Length: 226
Image 1 (cartoon, rainbow, N blue to C red):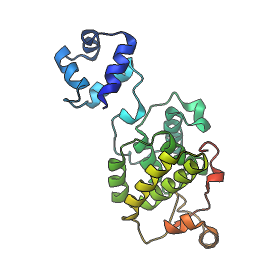
Image 2: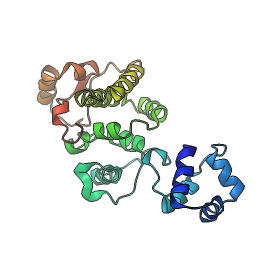
Image 3: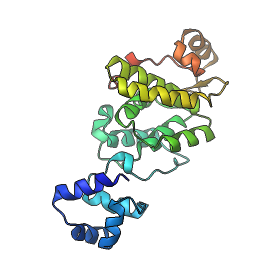
Image 4: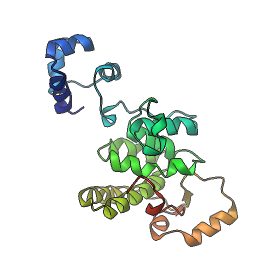
């Protein structure tokens, strides 16, 4: 966790180290070490922090996706991150953005409204744990799906003039491109018919073709990512 964040929010609340340490159930010297980045944050401590502070989503504990996750659970996780399309669900449990992305990308059949939300996650949480996400995406063979989402997000950043973010995403694309799979894949639409696959193969964008993706998703289809 970024030490500046913890110290800043503590001071913003007007709490001393001693008061904060008591609320977290740790000693004052230990809290000082936490703020200096010399001690790691355990899952238990992060849970306690969330009771007292607005912990940034990118600082949450990252967990491997559960084996069975419903579309409703993914929608609630997106809503909790602040995705406007599911604003009515924002009181749900918060997951780390990388966990939300990986969970969604692993789904064999992902609802279109959920797939369309993924570039928004990258746009709003560009400093998520990319090493964790890349490593596990490759283990699950969904790096092409993730690469395509990165490309869509970069295109959105370019359209809005956010060149700094576009450059960051371009570098991430290049990094993931080295692990690109040769087999064709879908963005969570494994049950599509042979006819649909043929049509998408012929009509897909150059970006989708590069990532060997059978999809017609383009930046114009993303209502909240521009």
